[in-house]
Length: 224
Image (cartoon, rainbow, N blue to C red):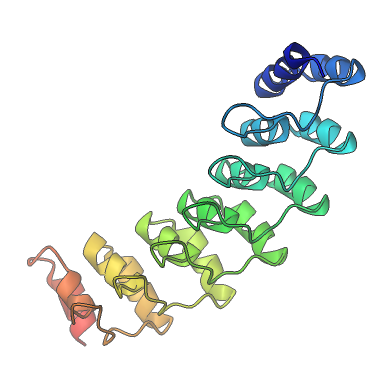
């Protein structure tokens, strides 16, 4: 196989040159060729939002389950950047919704952390594990709380994500929201049933996570 041809296909997929992609495939370029980091043409096109190129690659046998050196997949790249339609195409072609990268992170976690609500909704509907945990013990809901992505938080809770899940340090979503000083979010989590009496691994409860001693409203919410 012509290495130059394969590298040219990778570049064309990265830059969104659909016509060139078609030509190179016709000339025999390998749609599953990987660069030194293990990234494929499909990963590059998916991450950059080139839907027509993604469709072309899939039609010519691109491996939707391929992993790079970090165990990232094309779906993870598309999810992170909010490309819902590409996510749909990849899942329909067999991409693993619940695949984990080397840090234990899933496509859902990436979309949740960056506030890509549409992608979060699609992945949940496609069978994503809402309570999967990464190497730090964090869930997609925790990621959304850390990044203060309110729409994602609301959606995941309507889908019954575990509001009281604890990470490896024993921290809950309520603790993280308290630490961030997010009064309205803390109020919302409490209304949805978050347990303010849970203790982390050091024996601290949510109210002890409040950093601003002058935020009496937040302190009172957590002490009521």
